[in-house]
Image 1 (tube, rainbow, N blue to C red):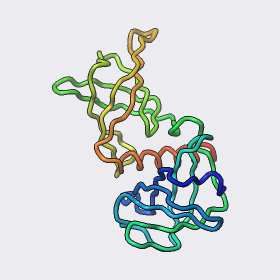
Image 2: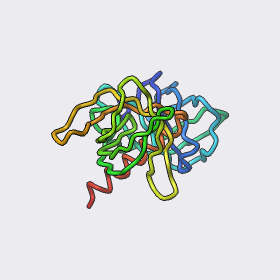
Image 3: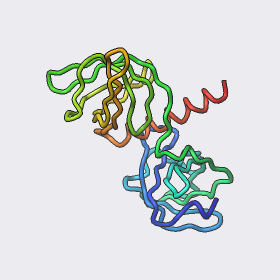
Amino acid sequence: MRELIEKDREITVVPTDYKCANKGIITDVQPQFFTVKLKNEAKGFLKHNYCEFFTTTSHGTLSFNSYPESIEGNTIVVATPAKHKFLQRRQYRRIKFIEKIEIRSGSDTCKVMTLDISAGGMKCMTSDSVSIDKDYDLILPLSESQNIECRFSPVRIEKDSQGGYLVSGRFLYKENRDRMVLIQYCTKRSIEIKNK
C-alpha cells in the first residue's frame, strides 16, 4: 500500500460530513503514516474518525478509508491504511442512472432521459435538439433530500434508430464539493448493486 501513496500527489479527503470534503497534497510518506497539506482548513475532521480518500495512480483511481492521527491547522497526519481498492481504470466510476430531467441553456430547454452517470459526466437520450456548442444547466436528483447542480457540456451526439439522439458529455461543477458528493454516491451505489 505504501508504494501507491506518492509524495506530491493530489488527494481528496471526504470526512463523515461530505460537505467538508477537502483536497490536498501528500507532503510526506512514512511506513506507518502519511502527511497531507489540505487546501482549506480541516473543518469537519476529527482525530481517529474515519474518512474516505481518493487519489489517482498509474494503476487507476485508488480508494481507501483511514483516519487522521493528528490535525494541526490544515495539515493532517493519516494512518497508513491496511486495505485499499481500485475503483476502476477510468477516472470515475460509472453507474446506471435512469431519470427524466431537464437541461437548460438560456431560454432553450430540453427533456432528456439519463442512462448512466459518473462524477465525470453522463450519457442520456432525448428527442429534443441538443447543441454540441452549448453548455446546459441541470439538476441531478440523487435522492429525495439531495440534488447536484452543475453544467453539462455535450462532447458526442449520435442519432439513434428511433429518430432520437444519444448524447454523451462531461459535467462542469460550480463547486468542487458537488463532484465529491457524486464520486461518493456512485461508489456507494456501485457497491450496493454488486451486493444485491
